[in-house]
Length: 77
Image (cartoon, rainbow, N blue to C red; front, side):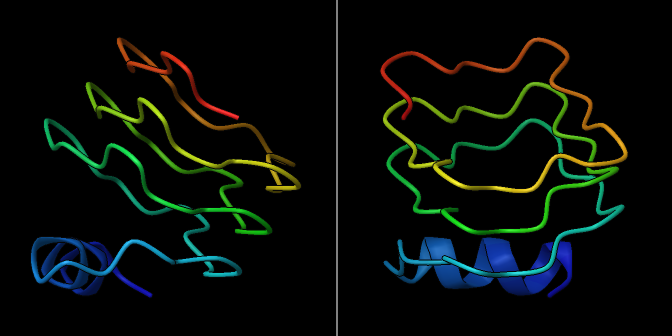
């Protein structure tokens, strides 16, 4: 899944993105609060200034690192 598909789906009201592959995707300055990214591949993802408050990140893959610079993870799982 690319950045635009994710953001369009989220803006359309979709919240369940469990299992998506966001390996190496760069997303910045966007509100993705309450998103479900459980079991997602976030290896190498750049999530600069993304609001992930109340997000479900359980069992997400961060192998290869992920950039969480200035990310809001308040109440994230």
